[in-house]
Image 1 (cartoon, helix red, strand yellow):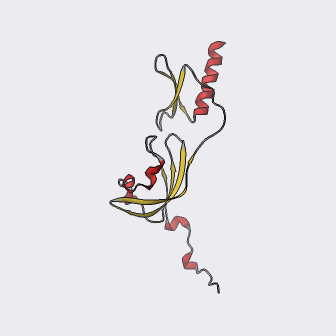
Image 2 (cartoon, rainbow, N blue to C red; image 1 turned 120 degrees about the horizontal axis):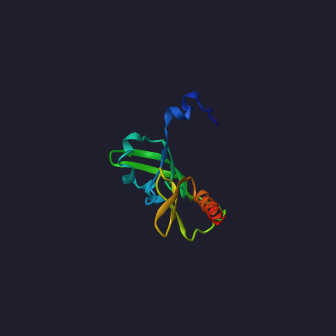
Length: 143
């Protein structure tokens, strides 16, 4: 016999949990999510049931998790999705004399001329956008 769900067991999600967005540094691998010590500086903000969306700073991978437990020692987070590599199969033209490099959340992807290490373009949202700028720059210089 099935017993019907009581209304006291159903609430709006925003009333019982928080959704956090986390941005690990490029040097932090996806395995950091399940390491309780990685959360030690922010664990006081977390409570069991909170959802965590994780997007690496350089946007190379994404994961989601649920907080199982949190305390001054850190937090136990279980992965519910991912980590998955974020990729786009679009061809990025190699930039022989230029380097496309992630420079952090403010500068984002930069185009750097290799011969003198000069930053020619920054704040590109993706490697593809930076590569398109390089292509456009080459065409402008050739004209």
